[in-house]
Length: 114
Image (tube, rainbow, N blue to C red; front, side, top):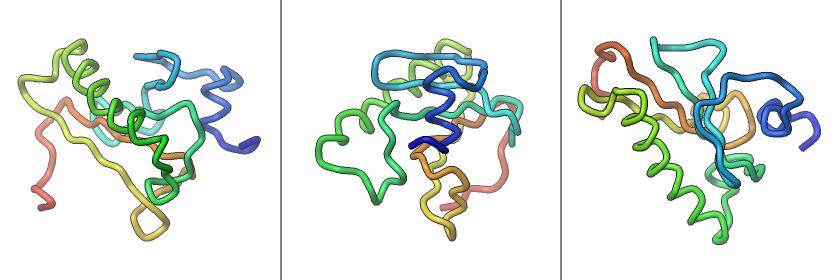
């Protein structure tokens, strides 16, 4: 997608502070953090949202959770804990139409949602 900000980050057209990258997945610090640690983890393939995911995307999306665990361990937040959020659609709070997982940590986060 030509106008997708995350696709531009993937192509290195927009600078970002990358914390993890491989052939399928990239993770970078959010420029408007909602917590002291706020990292976005995304597939490099453009998928608009979880509802647009195809069967062939399942392995990559599942692997994102393993990458989140690796990042949490690498930056030292695995023991104290963290939150992972995936917003879907306008009512779900999704602002960028490229599936992305928010990794939040670095302070005691608010009340449990569930």
